[in-house]
Image (cartoon, rainbow, N blue to C red; front, top):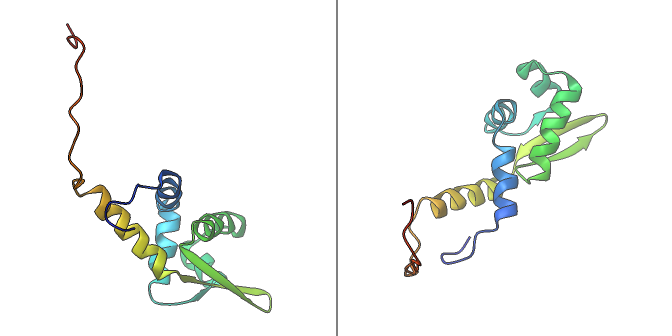
Length: 112
């Protein structure tokens, strides 16, 4: 995200939604060490296959992870570029805009 670029609210919401669940965060934490088989994630997270599939789908749709098939197994890995995008979004939200602020016009008194 370049400085001065308008925030893509839909994309930002998608990323923060994907990061808003403990199971998804735990999966991402496990993937920090590199690619992992879905069976390893399932065992370590003590998650039912259907539940883990849902969480991995959310992460994949947000672009935070990618997967590859090898035989009947799926292997997942973190997408570092999208984590950089999240980092840039957080920095953007935590930084005052460089554009001058426009004063609000007051047409009466507020709250009495």
